[in-house]
Image 1 (cartoon, rainbow, N blue to C red):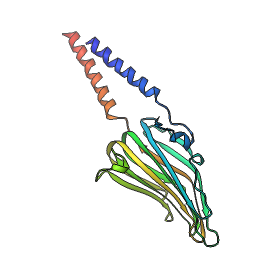
Image 2 (cartoon, rainbow, N blue to C red; image 1 turned 30 degrees about the vertical axis):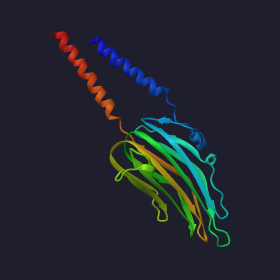
Image 3 (cartoon, rainbow, N blue to C red; image 1 turned 90 degrees about the vertical axis):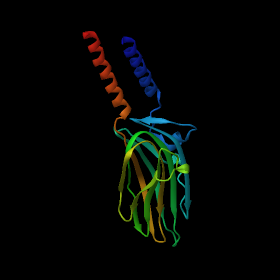
Image 4 (cartoon, rainbow, N blue to C red; image 1 turned 180 degrees about the vertical axis):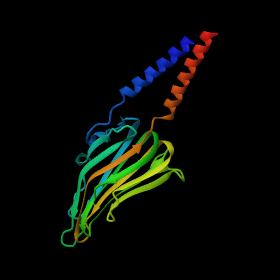
Length: 225
């Protein structure tokens, strides 16, 4: 019995070492996240497969990946990212301008919902919105029927927060389309987009704790007998 307990303890130490050696998600330009095979952790969640593309029209220029600052959200059970950038456009001579950024990544862990928030503002014919497509336990490119969905925030109309709840999943692939459009006579701006994911303690740790407790009780009974 002692050998079994020592074996389990060794596995726990190795597991803790593995988690400890993972790269913590950094604060800095999104360029850091676009390094080949880059993976990082924040709290209970692991983030990987980062991607980015940007377009613009009119008097506006595309936002480069280095123009977006990423700040990890480290709140336990509500991990994610804050993206800050200068999406800011205006019409000129009746010609519309827009800026559009597509941010994508994959989240793995024990996840029960996702949140989307932004602070878009506009004047006149301007509009701002962030549309996020997601897929459970697969990539967006090959998402099976019934495992995909969409969440959106807009202004106008002023809908700054959105949340979707679901049965626990082990991974989500997401793609955020951040858009600011001036229209023919207006302005539009976005400076902050927040994406977070609820991640209660994984069930595996609960089961592991129950198993250790059971072994302890069994050991006591063997000693008594």
